[in-house]
Length: 394
Image (cartoon, rainbow, N blue to C red):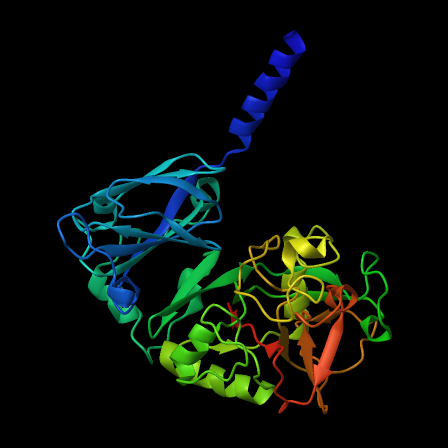
């Protein structure tokens, strides 16, 4: 009996010691975001339109108190909470982290505006405490934040360079960019990449600078918000956009940059593989996030011959979804052979006929879905299993 009690005590203490404390990295009133009003929005018990609070956190919210209307809805790191405009705070309880109370007045909001959208980004409190103190440590006014989010205004990533996640909203559609800290890795057919192909060799060292990559593949909702059309064969706002060529992707990115004032692009092949491997947090798995493909991917062994909503499988070490399976993802590079020479921020072949594709799709077998597996095609081809993922340079 003593050993049972000791074991239980150890488990309890271990659980407490591994729990992290979260802190608010930013609390932003996104005046350009109309999500709170879409589909009629929600009203509180007094019939007043609710505000929408989007909590960006890599933990599950198991309970919310303080004026929320309805349940918390989750999509990856994004947790959506409709909040009564009379509320003054939110008390959040998490699956793995300590509870956190967010009092709105502490961030310059005496109350939330009816029908408006707010974004709260939560990060590890210890990591936040290690960041240099900024001179502008007081919350920005809603006017200043609105000015920062106006379309066509050039925004510098240096002002948010420490953020682990950057939320972006374009024409009412939101998506997240995940930070990938710079580092070095072995690219190609490493030992866990069994049954590799010739073009995955030789393995070689690559060093990359820090960048941000899409948490998910570009969705049909985002493509429609930017381009005003949907070329996909399989329809659904939360499905990855497909039936897009490399050339189509360049036109999409050009228009997205015009709307957002940022400099999005396709990932280089090296950036894609580093992020898929989990960056500096890599556990050296065969697929992105696991060596068990069913945990992380929609491929021809489990999907019903069609793509599935993004972020419906397990994320990898960096919190990035679907880098294995669902749809192939175009890269910026021309396709070419590897060499053994170490490289820094490589851009691929100087010229070529084909553009690189990575990640495999719902039509592919497990071997094609390995992290190091490569594909390519002409830049003007459109297929129902070809999509894209975005990158931002720091």
